[in-house]
Length: 312
Image 1 (cartoon, rainbow, N blue to C red):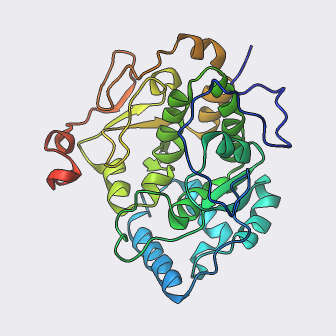
Image 2 (tube, rainbow, N blue to C red):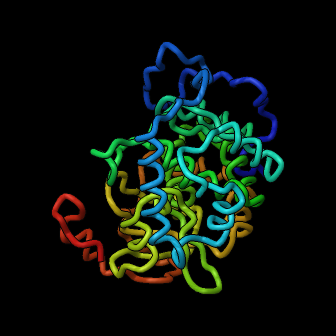
């Protein structure tokens, strides 16, 4: 059986990407190589550190009782509360003994195949810049706060860290079938906007939720969104929202459950049967769904962020 990723790919060097595989065209800055890695992490000034500290404090006001236990433990293990933008070298030195991961600086969003390659080598690419005061509440491109605060604490969890590693290898298999869109939906609904069922209730482990105060409350507590137990086949056929709160979130039982549903799934058969476009709207509930909460969709129906609708 072919699982999430083929095992015969050599990831010691950046593999060749076939000419017939479509990826978003991104212009590589002249100062970085084919790996898109920055020569060094940015030297952040006092204002940059102050922005990090203010973002950190704002999140810590809303995350207790809403963030996954693994995330909160990761924050403590990496001591991200010590103040200022963390040094990637220090983070890597602390992460490597735990799960084998490191954090590396990149200038911007990087091409899919390069991103997958870094994950397949247990390197997490993090934006080498931080938002300004003017973009404090919302930034379109992930910055160092989203990437390090939102993603890196979860990499201290061994099972989740293995999932991310396998996801990186899976990217190359998805490209062979031109199914990056479907695999991207899986990343979106787990790594970025995933929820987990814990003893005390639903909690967030996705970085897109954990790094934003409004979504941290909305995803876990609001009446508007659907919350549905994860079904990988269904998720990979489901559209998603990039610039607003999600109409639907998917919930896992545990990180072992996430690993089992994905890494042990026969993805080649799935890829052969997936349509080139999404089947389900991002607000849909279908007959196979195991519902945790049927959302009212009030926020979406009132027009979402652009209309000023309350995230309720």
